[in-house]
Length: 145
Image (cartoon, rainbow, N blue to C red; front, side):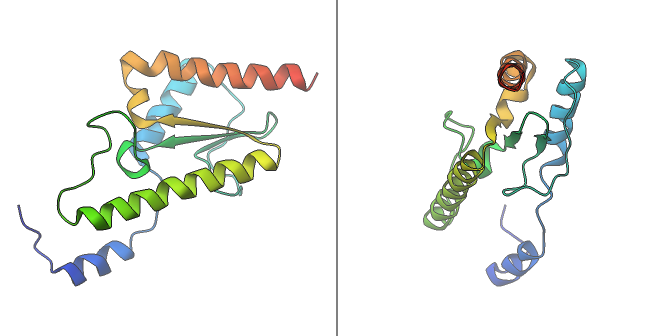
């Protein structure tokens, strides 16, 4: 289906949308954290890169990366649109580079960074994602004792 707006108008409309995270994805992560009784996290913290969840005491920054916007390596999860493919490839490459910079900067500041893919929040993969979170939190607890 073709767009009802011109390319210029669509660009203007999209430029006014401000990122606040993916509500459904973040709410799914909240549900998983609560179901597994993982506590001590905050969703709003003034930290470089704006992590989706922050465990301040353990110095863990958790990002839940959307498959499309962050370039999931799994086939079919992060496909580049066929229309304006060169533009989208460049845009998604910039997103990946920004993610690398954010991760490196936080790690250099003493934070542990964990990135979970949106597709890992489905029921069949969620236990593994929770296990990764529990492992990084447990490693920080033993380091601070």
